[in-house]
Amino acid sequence: MAIAAAAVVVPLGILFFVSGLVVNIVQAICFVLVRPLSKNTYRRINRVVAELLWLELVWLIDWWAGVKIQLFIDRETFQLMGKEHALLICNHKSDIDWLLGWVVAQRSGCLGSTLAVMKKSSKLLPVIGWSMWFSEYLFLERSWAKDESTLKSGLLRLKDYPQPFWLALFVEGTRFTQAKLLAAQEYAASTGLPVPRNVLIPRTKGFVSAVTHMRSFVPAVYDVTVAIPKNSTSPTMLRLFKGQPSVMHVHIKRHLMKDLPETDEAVAQWCRDIFVAKDALLDKHVAEDTFGDQELQNTGRPIKSLLVVTSWACLLIFGALKFLHWSSLLYSRKGIAISAVGLAFVTFLMQILIRFSQSERSTPAKVAPAKPKNGGEHPVAKHH
Image (tube, rainbow, N blue to C red; front, side, top):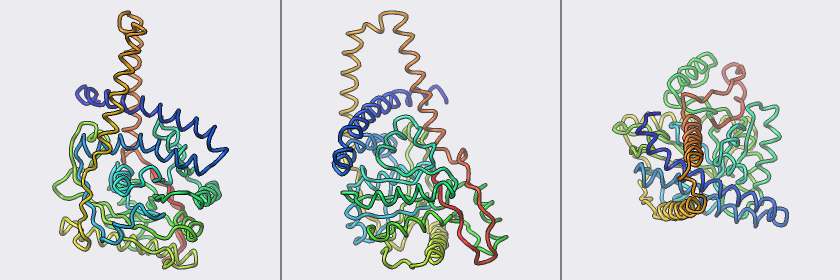
């Protein structure tokens, strides 16, 4: 990482990781002391605590980098968002789609109860992965034989969730790149599937499982399509830390869960059809540089994330000054060495987060051989 970028990343990293460790400690205490007595009380507390961490990343998009997220959605669905349980399926267009989801969730009032299906290694990420684990994100191993029961139990645990939640499922199974698109096109051509142009082929087992086990208590599926306008650069974590703006278009269409087919194969085909339609929608976006079939809703730029980050910064600066005064850490060679090691460690952690988010470093899930023409389902979607 360049020196100039590091000069920006390190202070933000210190703020994020120190405040994040505070959040993790509070989450751990509540997990040990509150959850055994009342799972729903723990969930309500954790929803607020986790939001104090996620809002820092929302601030990064809204106030630091100035990324503009334009939301195309009908008014009725816009008013329902955040007031009902929902299963979200989305194309995986950029490195920070998960962050875009958090921004939209924050606007809808359900940031602290937004969940996702992630690969198992994600929970090992310092601070952010630990907080996801406390928040009941679902972690899979990229093996359907192992993941089927894990996914089922994780989905059923959400049945008594006390507040509206969103569960995001990236059914393409990996982040979009041109190399992966070429592989998907070759695979589709060889198996008689529609050849994609803007998306990857959905892997439907995870979606089928989600619909099967959540149909009774989740009323809607949100079909989310993310696109980048022609005059904008695709956002990345590094660009965000550098304060470089982008524009993202987000299209949402609501489907009633009760309207989905009953059989597993029909649900899988419904998912594949949704992605064929999504591909055509993205073709139209390429031509028109907008989602003209839906209203552009004004989501604004709420001040809440700015207040939270400012409060964290003041609290940590005050605590650091008190500690340095008490310990005289910067008045000795040993203290200076310890401080330097600490800064290097934070820089290393930020490198991990940035590298984790990069699409070119993600690996596509292995695709089992397809049945001819109308052949069976693809393996489960594995986020990242």
